[in-house]
Length: 402
Image (tube, rainbow, N blue to C red):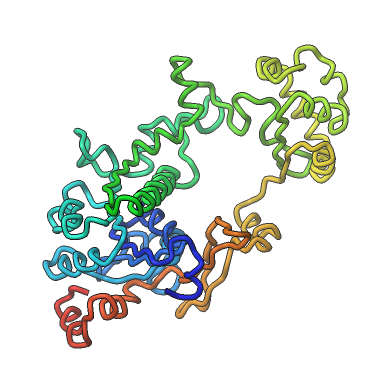
């Protein structure tokens, strides 16, 4: 345990990450951010699929891979070989957590299933991530974020009225599944302190995708049909959304009736709107949005963004600029918060890494390890945990196990 890890909540916890692509790696990275030692197992030739997705970094990493693999060590193992399976099994026996997202039945054929490993290590917390209910008729279907976004109605709630179904800008189902999985693993680790036994956690992308619908999903059930689409506006609060100022977009969030009155009188200088009986309450404003919204759009468009933001802030109305992604990541707020860091890289000189969003006692956990090069830690892990000597490493490499 290093000094950088010692003060973190999961210091001393070891995770074997057998997963790839996004949901599983994100869940394991979350544990790593919180202090766990994470050993990522990858195919000796190609590594994680995402090492070949997106913008290249160095020789073996990409922006996609790096986004969910900080604070990990990478080892390569051919899990189709008996020797590779044996090594993975031995590593699992020295770990507290195993994360895997193979197709249902795949890990059992490798001797790495929950029942097989927990029989040898009853304290093991084991997380399986699949596309669909692993006990249902679709258990063997592969899970893909975009497919699940379509099947769970998420694409149907995005975009403007009369716009075709629209996916989220990022793989939101995968990311939520990774976070839900991390929560479940933390709960199981906490329970293990009382019972001495681990758990088998089973997560499905479909289940998590449906949960993301949240209040929209409940509205659909109550209505008996899809709720209307509102684009960048809020379905229930008015005015609450993105508006175009004279020189660029901004977000205006008028959350209650007193804020609306101040907004009309002090921001857009339209006291008549505050006095209009149609707009006295939020429910009335929402019901009469077709009458109110065009007026607000026109008033906001006539004013410069800086003036609007200054007036809104003075009135205590939450507001903000709408920035481009690069602009946001390089903004003063992001830089001063330490949210984007540049770390040394042996082949690319340096690489950007997003920092963990957590703070403990006012301090953000450090990025202890940059996203690893493929197999960079194989020798060190096998030597330190399994006492494999130099001759053994040479043999495993010659047999293409590592």
